[in-house]
Length: 246
Image 1: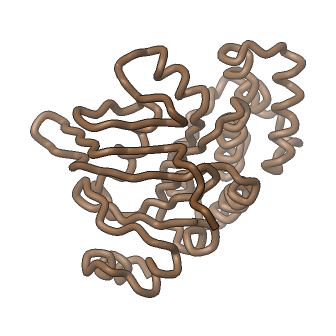
Image 2 (image 1 turned 120 degrees about the vertical axis):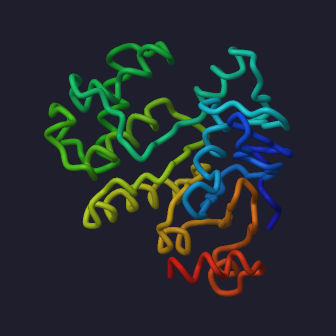
Image 3 (image 1 turned 90 degrees about the horizontal axis):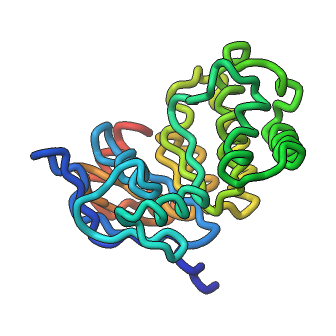
């Protein structure tokens, strides 16, 4: 099989927070439709790295292309990229004073300029897809954490992005709620969505990822298939990390 065309290209990216060197010459290509899982210890640069993909974090050196558009200080480029890149965070970041349906509708109406009817129709389809259509008229505070995270996924999908970023989407959830969120993510991966997922969910990585990445100290240590990564890692640092989480 031929490799898919890269939809994300990262070349020698560096990021400093004053004297702290958070990203140290990171390079990666992610193909269209691929699911990439990024793992690593706390403070390794994982979240900073994926937040550069949509301009939530700037970077000091290097080059990032998202679907052929270069991330730069040009706000027009950033706006173009953000329309194509959805993101789901650890915390759900829902508007507490809006209903579930209103949360999902908001961005398509204002950014995509959809009519209220179209935005509502798409939102209802997405809420059904993530299994919480019956919660449409409730407020976030009336939902469980797992339900709120599924609303957050529906809200990101409502913009019809080409790429979805997940920054430890299950880490704030109780264990019994993790499965329902991962099921939605599995469905999304099976539909062909390009996904970059920062997570420690080994089962998800083994089952769904096309490639698994280990980051440490702002660098990419290893990139391989799930089978190779978990059964036959090449780097000693990867073996040490896996011994702590498996």
